[in-house]
Length: 310
Image (cartoon, rainbow, N blue to C red):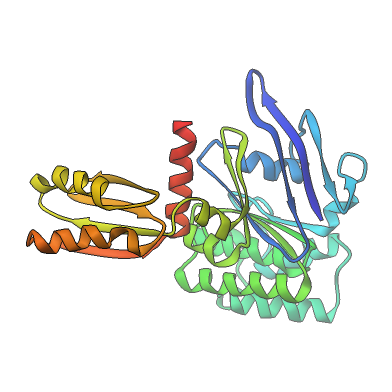
């Protein structure tokens, strides 16, 4: 559906997109991740043709967006600051208006908008102009407009900003249903790693305008580490325990400290059994000790740290 092919964008001497390439297929939800200034929003704006890129191309259904702008009728977007809505209209009026611009109208559309309005928690604000809504509800109104006409591709730039926990959970359900049942594709930027972990099958990570990872989430975690041990012990014991980690933990792992906490990331629980046995033998009773699977947040942070060291 969407293909980014060696796209380059610069502002003066600063290159913000450096020959980036990735694909988004129909029915796929892809995360576009990176630190602030890595090029995520520039990528989204390039796809929407809000800015021009100098080199490369972007294809929608195998057709260059440079030569055919009709693809925009099949693309929806939630942009930062709720820029995709008219603040003088209600949430539903916005949804109907932007759907009509793309050739959608009728009873079935209104029913779909009404159902989404309820799921996003906007029913009680049905008669209010977007201008009078809270920040979180403005974000819901932007989501309603983008989701209403079921575009083939939906670009979501930080969609969970300002949303309450219940709405975030419902948004996960909506994205899953619309991608599964309707074959919609989603490209999502977010700093909410738990949200990304739940809805995305693939992840593209940008660092200083370059793609440093492009693949499925499971592969990202596997390429890094599978588990994390966190142990809190008295400060005077940290150095000795770190030395024992190097002696007793076999295979591939990494460790670091933060305050009085020692963190070890590793591939298999068997790798830390020797360390745990040694702690017991030495009668060292940690104030806190947990072993847990590596989260999307942990994987992303580790990848970014590796990129900075490279």
